[in-house]
Every structure is written in structure tokens, then in C-alpha cells.
Image (cartoon, rainbow, N blue to C red):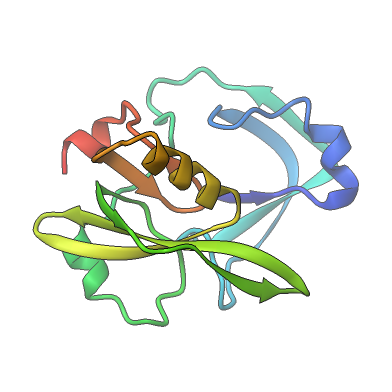
Length: 166
């Protein structure tokens, strides 16, 4: 599920939330998840408000990474206008040369990485700080990086049960 914290409320919640943790929260706004860019396939978005309360949850049923890996064959069947991002796992087999593009009058670094799984290849565009991460791994002489997953984050060699099941 996608949840959003407005800029004016970040200072309220940033010390209460850690990446990858599970929480129970109350007093929030719900909206339909629509538009051209969606980070999840869920039908709803959650928005934090001033009175939103957050409590840590210690539940083994909820996966730590909150991912749902999509097989490459299924992704290949999606249209170019597929409305949301997906989670994938595979072996990085190549990196194309670094390029730059302009967004909002700023130069942004860009790489295309090749990820293989099940005899299929995906070319994935990596932007910004992720470019430096990939470049440092390649410079360190890494030949292959198993279990790379990419959505709005890049996890390299994580201990994730879903990746082993592919």
C-alpha cells in the first residue's frame, strides 16, 4: 500500500518511521490510486495528517521488504502504458554507458542495467543516486550480482524468501 507524508508534516513523522519497518497507524486520509504514475497496484493511497498516530508492529506474517515479485514472462506481456511499477529479481548481466538527461533544469545521471531471469532479459533504467551505487559495484570488479530487485529501491543480494522461490 502506498502512503504519503506531505512536506509540511515530514518533521512530525521522520523520527517515528524507519525504512523497511511495519507500523499500525490511525487517523489518515484515503484516496483513489489513479493517474499515469502509480507506485503500487493497490486501489487506494493513504495520506498522513497532523493527527495521524504511528505505532510499531511486530508481526511475522507481514514480509520485511513488502515486495511481490513478478515473473519476467508476465512483465513482457504488459503494455508500454502499464500503470504501476513492479518488483523483479534477477542477475545483473550488463551496464550500458552513463548518460545524462535534463529534468526541471537539472542534469540527472542515468544508466541502463540488464537483468536476466528465466532466459529473459529486462533493461531497467536507473536514475540519480542509484547510478553511483551501480558504478561503484562495477568498479569494485563485481562480475554478477544475484537477486537484484528494483522498484523504487534497489536491493542487492538481500536475504529475501520471494527471490529464492523464483
